Every structure is written in C-alpha cells, then in structure tokens.
Image 1 (tube, rainbow, N blue to C red):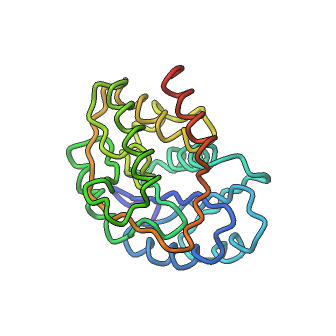
Image 2 (tube, helix red, strand yellow):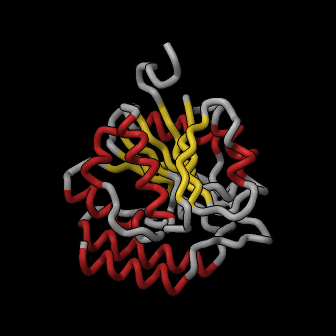
Length: 224
C-alpha cells in the first residue's frame, strides 16, 4: 500500500512564491505529520522549486507565472480531490505556521468539516496592523455569515477533502480564503478553530499587501 492508498490519507498543500530560504525546512517538518505534500509553485523565479522537487512524498504543481495565492490553493485542492485524499491541510511557506499543530487540526476534523487556525486568542506577538485588519475582516465575515469567525486571515487550515469541490475559490488572491469561508457556511458545513501561535519575525515581508487585500475582501463581502 503506497502513501496515496492509505486509509484516512492526509495531504498538506503548500503554495509558494520565491520561498527558497524557508521551503526545504518547512517541507521536511510538515512531512513528519502528513502522508504527502502538494507543493504549488506559483511562478517562482528563485530556486524554491529545485530545492523541493526531489524530496520524497512531495508532488509538484507549477504555475508558469504568478497567479496569486487563491489560484495556487485551487490548483492544490483540485489535485488533492483527484488523488482521493481524506484530509487536506493548507499551510503557508513563510514559517509562520508551526507544523506540530497539524495533529490538532486533523483531530478537529473527526467532528467538523473544516478547522482554521486562530492566532487572535493571544495577540501579543502579532503586529498592530495585522491585528487590526484581521479583527475588522473577521468581524465583517461574522456578520455576513452569521457565524463567529475568529481569524479570517489565517492560512493554516484543514478540510475534509470531500467538501472541497463545493467551496473551491474563484478569486485568485488572498481574498480567496475569505471567499471559502462564506461558501463553507452557506453550504452548511461545520467549522471549528484551533488556537495556534502568531509567529512573526523582524524581517517579516508578507506577500499580502494591504490595499489589494482590502479591496479583494470588499469584493468578497459584496459579491459572494
């Protein structure tokens, strides 16, 4: 029986764009907790792809140009569905998500359809601008969905793979993650939150840019 035929197989999707300084370390750590990884190269121009392409149990999906995080996630989701996995995690490539929490996410899926990492339970290490924007977007999504959304911007998530076909994003940027929450609640799928640490470094150079992210989020609120 290979890793794609295991009962209750778990895969992690790691979308990445120019993450050569972090990617190998993250992939090796995540593989301690999942059966395999779908690594989606969203048009990287550095050596990220070369670093992970030969690691065992890593499946590579590649975009020739940078299409955005939402597009990269969608590519990974479609591959996970195709492989008939049981559980699908998403984890960011910038080392801001601690892989040792993966078992907690999978445990949550015993009774829920989706689990999202919640960093807002302890905000002392989160930059003020992130804290403020996350509070506002989470509050607005809570109002829109009539569901208490604790951390709308967290990319650390886990899903029962069977629900993904119903909540695939159409937006291609970071706003896709909010879009998926709206679709999930609208389809009456169950949602839980897993408390995780907020990990930021002094050289944090997040690829989420404030203005495009806010505009994208507003589009989600108005159109989804």
